[in-house]
Length: 316
Ligand SMILES: [Zn+2]
Image 1 (cartoon, rainbow, N blue to C red):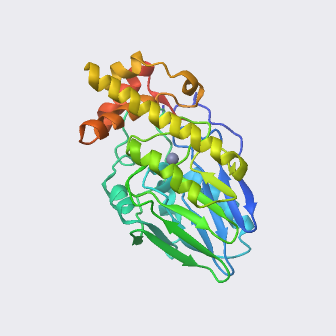
Image 2: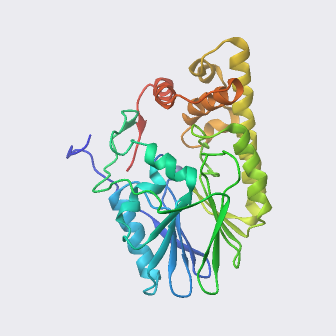
């Protein structure tokens, strides 16, 4: 409960800035559950690029302090948002007004339409301690791709060309060191979330991610992925999305509601992934794709809460 003195927050550091290649860093926040994301930083010759912010003022300030410590005085010229969800964007308003925020144009529209920060729904508990934040959407948008030139280095911002995790997804590719930041197109160790996406697009995005032939892939949640681990991570995501579609087809064929599908499904190997309740949300997404139409997000989240028998726990 907000303001309840009996609720103690984790005193451990909020995140860790790991250098994954020369001048390229991953901000890893454990355990990566709901609202606890990864971000990144790329140093250029004279200026730097941030990749995503965080959910709360405290978590974004921790990210910005860690970046400041490695930036060697380089100002943050750009910040890329990989998609519009608040765990990757709410901290945008803490950036300097001179930092240009960049996103795919549908990402910007999605952020402008999402009132979750101002009107937080009761599906998660406790309500995140957002701090002094306001929505700040990108000032610069692109369609398929854009490149940020940083002297001897460039960062390419690339949209898959279809809806996967969201309609405005973008990956950040640093070609000189072959590092790919994919945002929430990958969730290693976690249950992937596609309530705002399309299951077949999420499947399609896996081959697209593979096509970069990256040495390092930084996901939106979970640990950094080495090239040698990527095939296994992609295969698990594909198997999970296929499972979601299969269960959606079963539910539609037998006249079940998404909640009834979730209650009668055997999650099997996927039951051990973090945040298994996302299955309920993902079945809603499968229904939307298979029958046509859009996900009713409030109904989907209410079903996830019903499936768990309690609100979704948050640690932010
Ligand atoms: Zn996320």
